Image: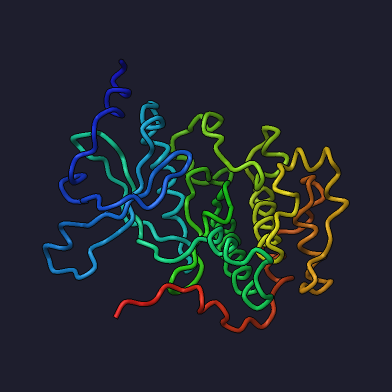
Length: 302
C-alpha cells in the first residue's frame, strides 16, 4: 500500500485541526463530501452560530498525489469571486494528523434547484424563473469576468438560500488562460466527473472548458426551470446531436419570442453556433422581476 493510499484509509479525526468537529453529512458528490461542521474555536469565544460547511475529497480521490492541490485549486478559484450569488469560502487547511486537506465555506440552508424541480414537474412560473435566471447568469457572468470557469453548472450545484441563489462547487472549474498561473497544473483528464446531460458537446469530445461550455450548461438548467424538462430528453449533447434533437426544440409558452431566440442560441449543440455570452443572455432575459421565491426560502431563525 502506498503512503497516499494509507492516508486515505485512515479514519477522520474527531475534530480536524483540533478545531472543526464534523456533525453530519450534508451531501456526497462524485469527488467529494460536504459536512456541517462546528468551529470549536469560534464557539469558545462565544459565537452563537459557529457552524460552517466543510468539504473533503472522497477517499478514492484523496489517494492521488495531487489530491490536495486539486482541492486548493477549487479554493483559489472560489476565493477570486466576490458576488452575492456565489458561495463564500472561508479557509483552506490540512489536518496534521490525517494529512487530509479540506475547505471551509459558508453554511447554506435551503433547497437545491433539483429539489425545486421535483416540486414543480411542469416548471416554475415565469416571475420565479426570471428571478432565478437573473441570479444564476449574474453569478456566472461575474465568474467569467474574473477569469473563472465553473465547469459543472447543474441544478444540484445551485441552492436557494435565505438571501437568494448561490452557485457552488467549483471543483471541476479552472482559470481562464493566463490567470492564476501559480496554481498547480493538474491532470484534469483524470477528473472528468461532470454530469453528461449538462456538458457541452466540445467538452465531451475532449475540448477545454470555456465560457461557452458554462453557457450551454446554464441554458440547459434555465430551460429545465421553465418547462420541468431537460431540453434534450436528459441525453448527452453527443446523443442529442446524433438524434438531431436540436431541430425539435420548441419555445416554452411563457417565454417571449425575443427571449427564446437568445436562450435557443445558448442551447446550440455546436460551439460555433453559440454566438452569445452569459452576460448577453442575462441581458436578453432581463425583465422587471418581482420577488416571487418566498415560498421556497428557508425560514429565518428567530
